[in-house]
Length: 112
Image (cartoon, rainbow, N blue to C red; front, side, top):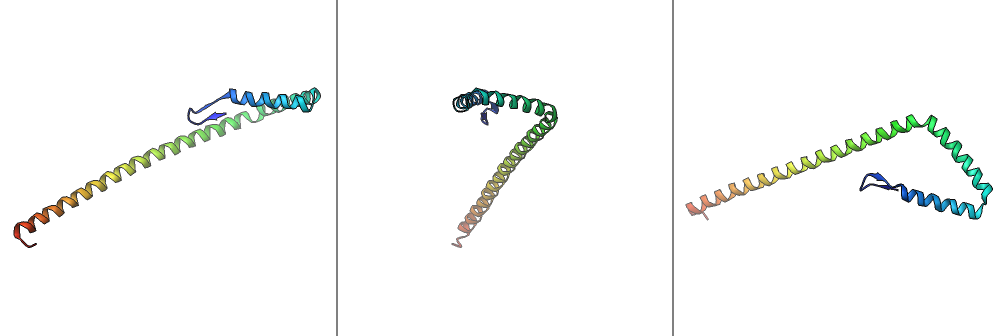
């Protein structure tokens, strides 16, 4: 139902599953059981909308902030890794230049 690529909730998939469950319940249990389930769902909806809405919103906001923090740390770690790789490449290039200069010096003096 939730697409992490698009960061969106696709309600059509969830509706399809609910319709499938409803049809399965109607076939096996009959309309009496379906009316009991509707009453229970209505009671649960009224109960959860009153007592859990503030807590749920706070939890969702906390999770969202945590996700943003993790994303920020990942970006910082990536840039730090890139900087360290650049420094390593520059250091190897500098050592290579020093080595080549020393080899030219020895070749001019005919030590080798």
